[in-house]
Image (cartoon, rainbow, N blue to C red; front, side, top):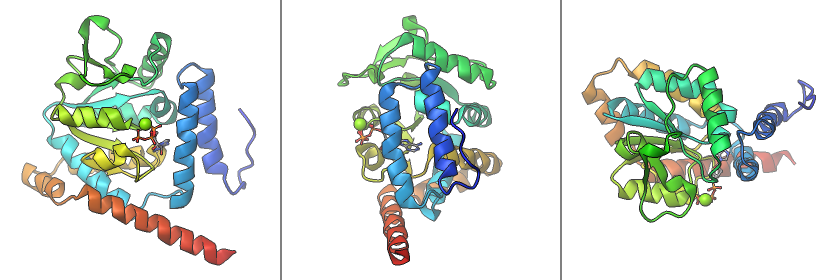
Length: 254
Ligand code: ATP
Ligand code: MG
């Protein structure tokens, strides 16, 4: 791991980058995952590397929808596993949700490595390793079409951090509620999901865990009100406004 001085102005983001590189070296992250992370970093920079007010609102809606779900699932890939394995496992426990490995670039070894990391972090069961349970989502070419019949296929609410646009559209067509983390408010995923949390998973997943614990004691009516009061398009616009504000502030500094 590279040595990063604590007072380096970009220490946090460099440390996050190191986690991805470690994940790549340990066979968890795909090469392409490193590039996808780079795109995320650029948007995080534009947002000021903080969880915006709008993102907090989306997190409340996401937590409520996940608590209300009959059969919630967290879909994980290499990047999310490298960045926040502990939070994923704790969130699954809090929500009584399943976890399933779902990859864009299929690789059985990588699937196994991801499951190993999640188990090391306390996961009891992770779906996605047993071909006898595989089902295919119609209309998709990438490996992401392969899902577990007792997992994503059966779920009503799917949390898909860092999802691909095509699959978000397919999951929605199958009648699922899709909740995603995406730092790019303009991506197809961000624009298609019912709840988009425009935040870095490394910060947002922690916040989602805290809020889910808090809201889990609320009654159904309160949670339904939070969900129905959330408008994803409006929320995405609010995030774009945050980017503009941040850029204006930065521009005045130079
Ligand atoms: P789409 O397929 O939805 O149109 P895309 O093709 O532009 O999006 P992908 O490569 O499919 O992008 O997905 C990667 C997405 O994940 C990017 O939008 C990127 O901003 C986002 N991303 C990458 N790293 C993070 C992170 N740590 N936290 C949140 N989002 C991230
Ligand atoms: Mg894509």
